[in-house]
Length: 84
Picture 1 (tube, rainbow, N blue to C red):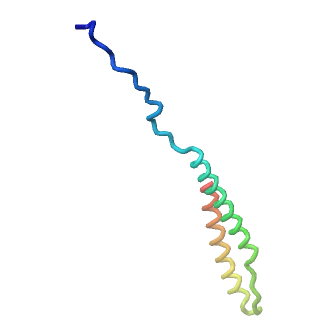
Picture 2 (picture 1 turned 180 degrees about the horizontal axis):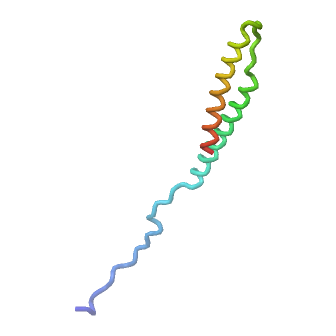
């Protein structure tokens, strides 16, 4: 009986293995890095634009409002830097 036995033909699985699109993945990661850098630059540019003309009597309140915005900008910038 053994002399009539034939093994099955070999099936190579190289063509059937899933290959993720690495070029697309690197392009997506590059785009995300660029977006993060643009957001960080925009946030840092905002801090230079926080200026207000006010009366001397209103200076403490204006400074308080501006420092609140500066704190928010700093928090967002630190969150972005943690991502990087």
